[in-house]
Length: 171
Figure 1 (cartoon, rainbow, N blue to C red):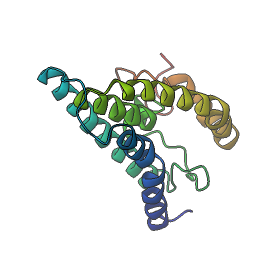
Figure 2: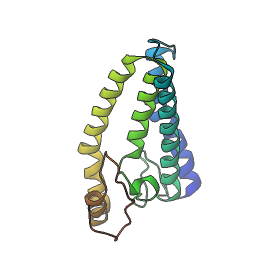
Figure 3: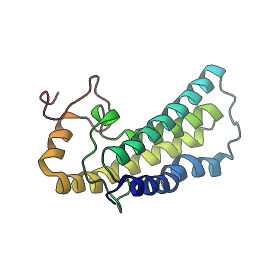
């Protein structure tokens, strides 16, 4: 998939199938989006903000895969180029972090601790997938370019300052 329109269609479908299920359908099945524990309004507001921020970051990352990488985040239709712009200059896994933010946000907004347990399980699954499949695949596909990026940009905790390829040494 090397043209942007095909990448956009593929990314949209993958958006519905992956984060749509993990951060939308399954939390709904677990909670029916009904309020459980009556958390104080600041906690609920923080949850709503976290959910919205996660959604914005997720959409932004999907768009970046189409525009910069000319591909999708789906393993069956990967990008032609390594995606290192936008939020990827701060952290290697903004999509996974955005999905987790959306899940935790729903847990706080709805007062549903089961979503925190679910979010923990999802986080473990993400780390296992990234370490066992994604990183080795990116290493094979993009070689030294990925290694430079991996050394400079943390996987899970964002940098304070954006990284630029061929720029400063890893921090």
